[in-house]
Image (tube, rainbow, N blue to C red):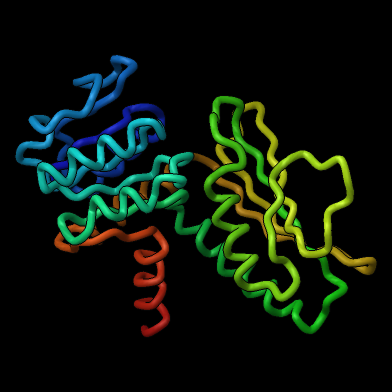
Length: 251
């Protein structure tokens, strides 16, 4: 594939390395900081490209989507913090191009989601276990809670018989029994740690995904791009992961 990287920060550089390892070519790097080949995405930069992979800023996602649709270039997008406009993007994409968005492309993170959901369902028979979650990221991360934490919370709400609402704000009261409290911490150089906890008077069960580097996210994003090639429509990373997990389950 010939790939345009939209966003050339730490993630963009990691994605570039994985692309080269897997035999793909990076044609342009777009970043407003001046670290790439161009400061903003334009239709001409996508000429001849097979795919765009975007880890940029939330404020750019919708405008960039319009350019992908205009040029017919599919895109994998890992930018977070813009999901209040996701339906707008879904309508823009329609069946015109392939567009795949995800808050977390790490295969390990999706194993973490699956384990947390399964554990939540098992507690239907043991209501004494209360669920909660927290996440830790480096001091430069701009959104809070992380997109991964919000994805986890939504999955737990869907799987739980007791938790119906997600609370992400600082509490000055005790949480209600039907509230899933998700806490965030920012500091240091932590690439990303997410913990799901089931707690009772007797014991505690913790499931943690701890990213050691950004490589896992980059590998997942590139594999998602390879999967997206030739497909049209709006997809989420879960669609891609379910397809991959399904292949493994059927072996």
